Each structure stands twice: as structure tokens, then as C-alpha cells.
Image (cartoon, protein in one colour):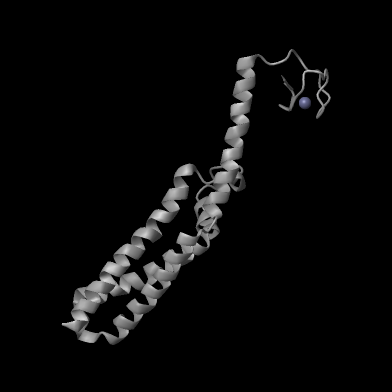
Length: 166
Ligand SMILES: [Zn+2]
């Protein structure tokens, strides 16, 4: 395998000039260099598939989003109709839970919205903000907030229902 020093294209040893830019090619890569080049290509492919994973809304995401929307609606109903039985703490918690669950549901269903917002941070510091890609870690982080919101939201709803039944 040969690598063009001018444009970085990889090509077979039979070429003496680069197939992409026609620059003169040097000696073939050593075995170690070839392994390194292959590793870089694999890394690039992994990044691309991660990007797809980041924006992919899977079945669990859709289920959690549906639960969040139901939770937000129930919280709204309890907030309006619960009256004094819900208690002061209950009313405050419900007031937080309604927008939080709604926002997290939207975030889960439309991951590109928060990604575009996240990129705004870099518009002035990074030259090509559009080329930024979600990291491996972000794939998990993007789901941590909605998933934990649905759990705490339903714990709150159970607490409210118990209070109302008292
Ligand atoms: Zn070239």
C-alpha cells in the first residue's frame, strides 16, 4: 500500500503517481504503517456509525418518551385538580415535573435539537462547528437525563396519588 504525501489518499503499490492528485508516490508503506492506516480507517467508520447511533431513536427511547408525556399530562391534571390535598411540596414538585418531563420527551424524540443547541457553544471557538460529532460518551449522556427523569417523575406521581388517597 502507498500513501500520497500530497493528499493522503491510499492506493496499491502498482501506482507510481497518485490516482487522486497525480503527485509522485514514494516507497510503499511498511507493515506497521499499513496497520496504523487501517486502524485510522476503522476509527473513522466507528465515528460515523456512532453518529448514527446518537441520532437514532430506538424503541426504548420511544417508550420512555411516551411515559414522559403521559407523566407530564398526569402531573398537570394533579396540579390543577389536586388542590390542597397535594400539599405545598407536592404542588412545587409537580410544577417542576410538568415542563421537565415534557422537555425530556422532546429531547428523546428529537435528539438533533439538543445537538444543534450544543453546537452553538462552539460556533465562535471552533472553525467548523458543523463538523463536530457526538462523542461515544454523549450517546449515553443524551439518554441518562430522560431515563432518570421518567423514574423520578413516576416516583413523584405515586407519592401524589398516595397523598390524594389519604
Ligand atoms: Zn494524492
